Image (cartoon, rainbow, N blue to C red):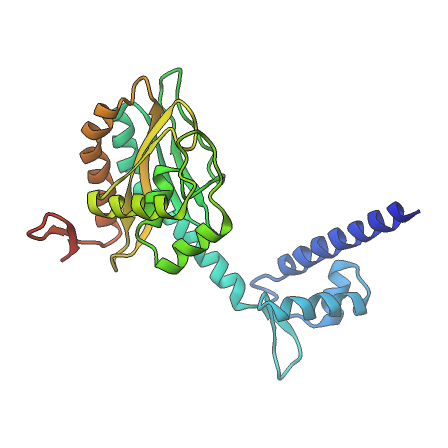
Length: 272
């Protein structure tokens, strides 16, 4: 007898989510602000239901209420989300020429990723034309601690962010996956020293990868670009040989984003 209640509750929650999305999409340039009566009529909902949904959306800044008219309009949270989506799209577009050049010069799969909620988020993937290759769907995620892209990103985050990743657990994926805080911190130190990160079968057995950080105009690491290939083609020697090419691609993308790359006497990258 309990299952129907749970199913009913689940359907009600899904209905609320759907109606909330419908309410957001009701607004347009011609209807900048709308009152509860108008919203309820457009959505075919009772005024009490429309008011409850609007109140919840206001709490999360998705809608805001005009104190003078009592009407509702789209809130700043949507602007912030839209800006974030556009920034990701702009980055993918800005990086496209360099990603294509990197794929053509190496013949291997090239990927661009961001750090997002303690994981990497793939925003571009150019697959190798070779039969045996790596692939990652745009919009999919992978762990930070055992991917070259993840380590290239994590190495330049604050100690607090690194600790959060450690606290969340360092899951083992292969026999060579980093699973301890000491190992991870040591690996990130090497990334900072060399300027690139390597994944030697840490995430997927039989695959090796190398990645370098991408910086914005302020010098902050906001993304990473890398290549992934089967270990038969990506030998350890080949990893070392291709490293300058990957770093150069990351630097080229960074320059397109306004970052000025130069060298100090120690050879490490600095902001000019």
